[in-house]
Length: 503
Image 1: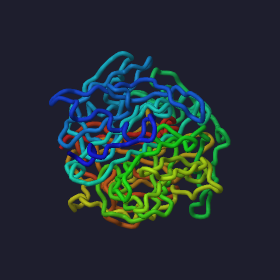
Image 2: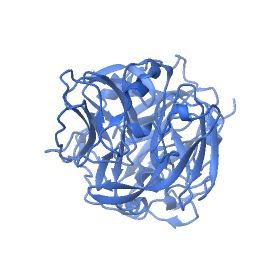
Image 3: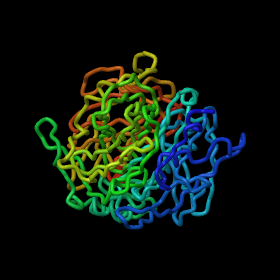
Image 4: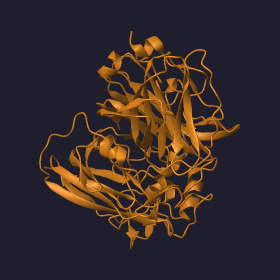
């Protein structure tokens, strides 16, 4: 019997918790049978108030999916919402026709179903709507693909799934932040256009014009950090709450663990606009994988992650049986969320949702990225093609660009299948950008000009007024999305395509 089934996830409540990520026990799925995954609405409680949010649930109503080693990603996706949607398998490398992005895949109409079938990559991943307003509405869930080493490991796995949350709809949130500049439904289809990079044609053809927008809800703006002597823009929206597995620190999840037991934390930053520090209160731990790929273990007690990124953190519980809070600290602000790992009988103390002072900035701190080393780096070879990709934008008017262009008037970035490509993101704005490339796994090979043999990733956080260079081997000949994973940036046009031509 595997350690996971032997120990289980003994949650202290009936909320989604760490166990909910293991949404359907493998023994209940017959060989060759497709799993059912539904995009739907659900109700959660936030601060004592009921909230209607979206979600991706299995046949039992639990969020997310966990696949066992060798199990194919064989899914029937049902849209039980009253609006069309499209779901992206973040970090996986499916055929382009199954990537879940509207530039190459049709939208999924209400009541419709679609089948997906490909060989998944093992590791910590997630799935989410590729419509920004829907991702803000929590249409996302964990996607855990277990490898053979996970079955052999004598450890308990705990999923920590992070969200920023508003009682307002995602469309209302985007309208507040952007002053009405967001694209209708958050995304445009292939063939849309913009006029002079200012006028964006949306999903259903409605035009919007960028307008100056102040910080919504008194956002932090330039507060909380400095880069090169200038204030960074860290947070541009004040959400109502920050959630860990759908819960706040007013009522955190308590996960039952063994005294002195080994734990693997699978941390997923599914927040739409927030970077976090994962803080263990000084308890020693090791970062062993990022974005689903193993790294040389990096010791520490606090690790950062941006929107769309994941961390696998290995730790051993205290031998004295005390509880261990795992906190997610919002950068540049005092808010925090998290869960508690607690052996039987351990005292679980109340933790305030606000710290006494703002947490430090993560967006300008490159120490962690510079220290990471891939366990299985790309084979060395010279670059066949190089690209400089300029990231720009400002808070007023609220507009964010790639190479000075907005989605719909973008010039795709060229590559040829099989080429080794080096791409440098040069950020000329005062806000960091978590850049996500679809259909590829890349290696970070330079940060601010310092060459490294860094981590394998699918999402990299580019610091304000800084640069990150990544290397990858161009894959399937197709147009692959490349965009910022800050949903308000993406919604106002910070997307382009990697256009891979046939070899």
